[in-house]
Length: 66
Length: 540
Ligand SMILES: Cc1cc2nc3c(=O)[nH]c(=O)nc-3n(C[C@H](O)[C@H](O)[C@H](O)COP(=O)(O)OP(=O)(O)OC[C@H]3O[C@@H](n4cnc5c(N)ncnc54)[C@H](O)[C@@H]3O)c2cc1C
Image (cartoon, rainbow over all chains, first blue to last red):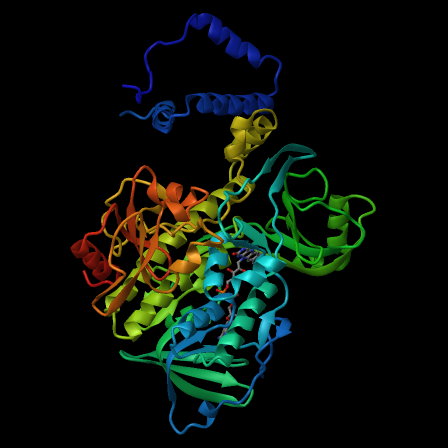
């Protein structure tokens, strides 16, 4: 099942991660935050690499029901 | 009454009155090509070399001024070489491998194209379009002098066309007035705004991009600019939304400024205004002469069908793409490559008329691939929404520090030939690899001793055998298939193995006259290869 997007809890210390995500945006203008988010998406997408998983992730983020 | 629509770079075929103009009734020609641009001339070279009578009609008397196309790809050069015009192009052309990408005021990265070795022709060259056309016209005259039945008539403007079941009637205007001829086959190579398409009422649909580009070809006087390609996204100097700079022969440089949709063309085209942009872009102290400039807009469009009975469309008349990725003339040359041998076989009674429908099928596949690629480049270079711009800039910002983002930077993808996957002329693949030479693929070149593979595969059906036995030749339905026997010994660099064998010990390829693979198997099987020949000429 390597080609299935993980949609169940998978992040260690979720509260820490969430706080770090928000903190990364501290003090940024809306434009700079948007740009950072876009870069983050690209960095994560490259890490995943697998086109199949990426397509599933795009669909999941669009809140499309299977 | 007979005004030129554009200025000529070279007058090559001055108007001469033809005997057809005084004939009592319209003279019938085998093939008439409407338009003597690069694609029309290439069509005459292809057919003329097969001994098929071909008449080219153009409403000018030679090659137009101004280099529109400057990048010619490997496949295009290979085709031109098959016609006997490729070598002078490469001799004159400029090859570059180093590209630099800039964003706003800084360089984000540079790349080396590192072209694959073991090909006679470079991945592409930069060459002014008038040279490209001239070399083909040189070849045209040479063939003519050797008796090939080809002719080009200058200042012969096609004004009306009537299509019948077995011929086409063509009304032509000349400086001496109008006359009529007939053609068994008519090929429209009359450019993006194709009057032929208009006359016959066929649609040309797709996307128009709301942007315009100012091109300036300049001759550098005192500068040692390197032979590199520079692409700026949103330069903070020089006022263009994107700017491209690259070198052509004769110390001429092409600068392309993206200047937006709402522009005052007349104002922008004034030399002082062009120089203002150039000076801001090139910086202080760079001296140059203006060679040519123009403003263009572009569209990605194609006809629904490139064949309508006895009328074909090839080149820009059939499909138009944005210039990013240099796919216009390059894909037009592939149209000719595809149509030439098919029309030759049908005219010589060796293949059914239905073979000609596969021109439509295969080249629409090619056109769609080109339109897709050039639309993607255009969307990256000129993002259509805020979000698209946000991601575009994110890619550029990341690419400065991280190599992973560089493949996402799209400032035009190099034109590569299309593989006719799913073509009705292909036989099922009996080898799993190499993938790049599966049925439908253009044959990749490879070094052989002191020459190259491709010139040995040209113009006829070839049975390429590698480490395998097969008859020296065989005939099927009037088609002669000639063997080209190679073995590992002919392959000092290993390129043949990598490109044609993979992990197989042996291979046999049936190759079409346009150097595309029709069928392949690890070994010879007479029935299967005979069937593959029939299939490749539209008889199965
Ligand atoms: C800015 C720019 C950059 C480009 N860069 C590249 C590139 O780098 N690489 C690339 O491959 N392509 C490029 N292209 C595209 C390339 O220039 C065209 O694809 C190519 O010229 C098409 O050739 P053609 O023979 O189909 O049409 P054309 O070159 O347009 O020729 C049509 C001919 O038909 C004649 N004609 C028209 N009407 C009639 C009539 N009624 N009767 C008789 N004759 C007629 C015309 O006079 C003309 O000679 C570029 C285009 C532009 C605008």
